[in-house]
Image 1: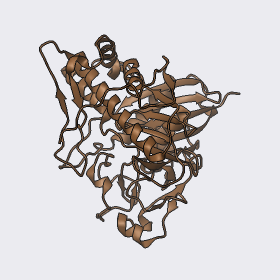
Image 2: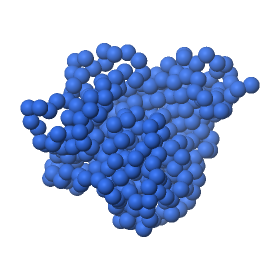
Image 3: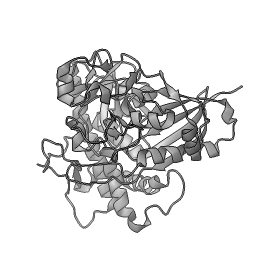
Image 4: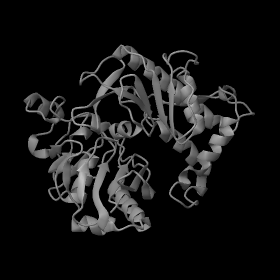
Length: 420
């Protein structure tokens, strides 16, 4: 008899849930949009109320309502959430305050003790407790300001690390490797999500590492353009050391490391921002899981008719200033009376493509290698084409786009200058 797993993918803008059989066929799916971020103070970016868990619970319910198979044949749940978030939990596992997004300035700083906080964890650590009642998490989701040993993937015994991060051992949850058991679905979680009570929940990796696994990134001569609210590029790492043009992230397999380039903060979010401006009061009127992308699809078609360079309109992508340059701002330049919404859309996509091409070049130089294959997974045909062209590579059509060339440097324009 066929068995099924439920795959939970919680991102910065939405939560996606799939019910997949043992052969990889999708039998049901759902997508639930997250609410806009809240900004309670300068530098603060949080998920309002309990939005991450609420979106996961709703997406699970919708997907399972659409599932026509036997729920008794669901044998496991895989959990993947946004990386670099920080959740402050009370002793009972509830949030002491809204979860800090990876864009929140506080997640890049040491934790400061607060009344009522019993645990400091990631988004996946929090959701694990909501699903299973256990304070346990995947080690793969602990990059950044955490006292983790990069070699062992376990909490460091070095007192200096505890001092650096402000986190004593009693604040931290138990770590497991990707693929290990996190716990089983509790009765309370089953009532909220529709998942069968007692089903095992398994650890995966951080969201970028899971994307690399799903995209088939497996060789040092491959590079993956990772698209999302944060855009970066990744390749197979040679170890845990960082270098010029790249840093090292944990992979989705125990002991695996991924080299990751510099990226674009609020990358695809900038596309969503433009879409929301154009939709105005009509936002949310369309129905369906992917209705939020209906206008984006039309913009993609319109922008594809424009020449490269968007008739002189250019985008400087700084819609989220870095901590070391808080006054930096983004810009759209080069308007004339002939420009319309498609020019803005295309200019943003071209800005993304050119900046990431430079970041790939810098990572390749830092690693001392060249890339023969470019992997792009993206819903926008125009965006994939612009990215491939900027990298000097032609992509085949299809949802998973690959291109081969021996040198990614040639045949592209320079990106617009940075402002600030």
